[in-house]
Amino acid sequence: MFMVNPGYMLWVMLPTLVLTLFARWRVESTFRRYSQVLSERGLSGQQTARLLMQHQGLEGVRIEQTPGFLTDHYDPRDKTMRLSEASLGNSVAAMAVVAHELGHAEQDKTGNALLNLRASLVPVANLGSGLGVWVIIIGLALNWYPVAWAGVLLFGAMVAFTLITLPVEFDASRRAKKNLAAAGLVSPGEARAVDAVLDAAALTYVAAAAGAVLQLLYWVTRLSGRSRD
Ligand SMILES: [Zn+2]
Image (cartoon, rainbow, N blue to C red):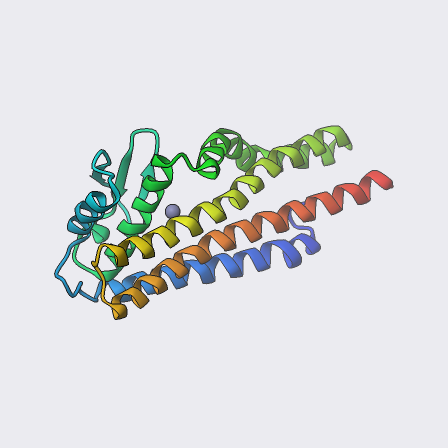
């Protein structure tokens, strides 16, 4: 009933789907393209990591391999950077990803407030994304608005998480570009390729945040309309 609402499909699901798919296609195609471009200095992702860690004073960070494609991440809990196979090999795309993840390690080391806030929001954001919409739907079905609004609040925690993610990700990419250049690991041409890879990655976070905000706006408008009935 609520999920097949035409307004929901038209104004929320469709734009979110289009934006998400476009961002996904963009980051995958950009990454694949620059995975084929070898580093001019012959550096693998792993070697880039070692050099950047020395340069940034991050020798304590561990490197592990993780399965999958574009699954790379830095985990502040155990100071470990997990890199996919493609990011360990020799390519400009790998250098961009490694430098970005070490940007997060640098944020962690310098006690970045937004990174900490984001980490503390993870449990409630996970709860909100899985449960929020269901609580709203149950509240609406039972005509029990306090429950529906509680669902909106839960869902809102997830939206807050996606929004706080944006400055954290932009900052990690800014650090990546700066550190690669400062350590002398990329030529000007390679720096432009690194920009392309990181900007494409940033778009996926923008798409996620936009989709989440759109959903939240939809539920708030729907619920406030109904509450007035
Ligand atoms: Zn990141």
